[in-house]
Figure 1 (spheres, rainbow over the protein chains, first blue to last red):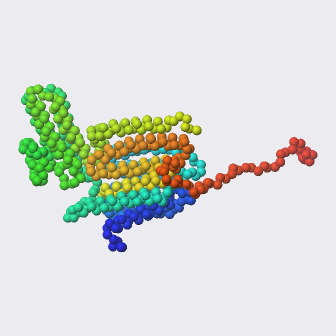
Figure 2: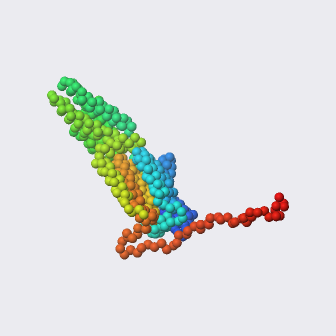
Figure 3: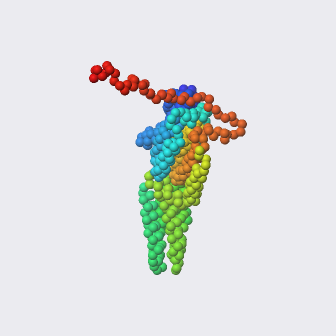
Amino acid sequence: MNLFALSQMQQAGGQIALAALLGITGFFLLLPNPRGRFVPGGIAALIASATVLVSWLMSTFGKPMPDIIGTALFAFFSAGALIFGTVLVVQRNPARGAIAFAFVVLSTCGLFLLLAAPFLMAATIIIYAGAIIVTFLFVLMLSHAEGPSDENDRSREPLYGSFAGFAFVGLVLFTLHQTSLGAKSTDPDVAAPPPRLLLPVITAEERKALANVLAKLDEFDKRLDGDLGTATDRIKWIDDFETIKNDLAVVVGVSAQDQFAIVRKDGDSMRARLEKQPGKPGAGGSLYREDEQARNALRRAETVRDTNYTSLHLVERELLKPDPDRDAAHAAVRKLRDEVVLLRGASDLPASNVRSLGFVLYSEHLLAIELAGTLLLVALIGAVAVTHQKGVAK
Amino acid sequence: MIITLWHFLAVAAAIFGIGLVGFLTRRNLITMFLCAEMMLQAVGINFVAFARYHGNLQGQVFVLFIIAVAACEACIALALFMSLYRRRRSLDSSDWQDLRELGVPAAVDVEPLDTPVVEPEPTLTPAGARPLPQPTAEEAARV
């Protein structure tokens, strides 16, 4: 249905501009104004704007129909966020605005949940519940309910303000459109898949195998604490560790130096897998996928592959000494264990990623956490210093 | 076809824009503060969507720090509102326009606010006359 024979870019630009203009009209009519507002017209303009926007979204990025439940939830939450955001902006009474903001936060939390971030959902609800209650207290303390007032019934340049906001949105959406076109046209032979959200990169069996390896590694780590036994015992331990290593190698593949070392029962199947991907040394193992979204997990698997190889050698060297250094062996085993935990958590985005989030927070971002805590403390002290002034109140 | 990254980015951009309009046009300090928080929420949606898309957790970690910074911002902003309110007895941000740049004319509100017509409190009309202390002769005869 292309009436004016426009190019795809012109059509998208026209749709976005139309949506932005309708949005500007709607907000201009709805924003508080001492001359009074034209509420039905404003609402009609906003609905028209939303319709144009949704039609653009559907025509550009596809109708997400087959996944009916996900689509319905996405539509519900995003419509809720947009509608209550609009209510917050055009509502004269700040207390009602705070209630609308509570619904915006709830809708955003729904979107977080759709994006597999359950911890963030809970944290946002808890923190913003407190924030909204405090805002309510401020509204009750500071605003005068009787009669119209300058701050609630006037807007600062409603036309220019909404023009600025919607021009921004239109430009962002147009850039999105251009980017998506660019992402599609890089390889004209292959119909590029849309940038869908992540599918599980690590399958359930692989995750189970990793959990198994983790349990065995913990057991081995504990065994290092006990009696080290004689040299022959320790050679048997090295064999055990090599079994663990091979279990892990079934999932992550073998490192390039290690390819001849496999003489165990899994060696044959792994070689078969390796031959399926010729020309990619070290890319064996079932984690290899032709999926560019799996890159991150693959990179992590590569790290694990190398650590797997080196840690076996470290443990072997330590245990073969007449007087083994427990700490060095512990360190090697624990390094491998940490890597495996991270790999199991990589792309573990269904609801159980809270543990991985904690691990990432406290391993890679420890300094940032300390800084955030300090910032909170400084903000608290600053708030007390700003509010506490003697002799100003009249 | 399923919900893609673009859908989330588009919705987040729209929420951010609505918050921007509110922050630019409204004059109540508390509403402006809530609009700024809404913009932060939109940025958070972007971060989580990208985290989901790339399959790692860095975006979610970033949103946690955004929440921490938003808490600091709320703390300082509300303290500032208290201190501003003490001086001008109002939450109107235009009361502070003497902090504007040199050479920019002051914004003056020309249109009068329509003050609602306050109905006067009802007053009762005096009913009847005060009874006389002594019954008249006619009344006494009737009794």
